[in-house]
Image (cartoon, rainbow, N blue to C red; front, side, top):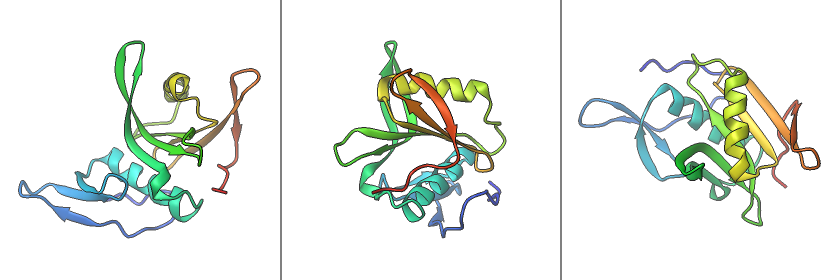
Length: 150
């Protein structure tokens, strides 16, 4: 896989090849190497952005979290919890060649029905869209950035 320069601050990923000669990247949240796919490349950049630039501790970041939606097992890319163990931010990562369009927004909003996060962050590594949930109307407003961790 070609390591594409994404629209994120630089970070130094830990990479290695496995015994099948596949490139892997270290996931600091799951504490293991994962096969490096284009989506994983975006996910790891997003994790490091959330930690190093917005201050969210790795201990409050969960990747590939499973949940049930209409009796179907689904996975969210990244969940950020607050100090009360409530989901604060739901992050949906796409490969850099997938546009963040209305379909992606709708997927994240549907996932958020079970997560009830205050914020949704959609990224393909080039596009970054931030949404804030209005608790009164259950609608979302696009915002310019996510709040930093307090």
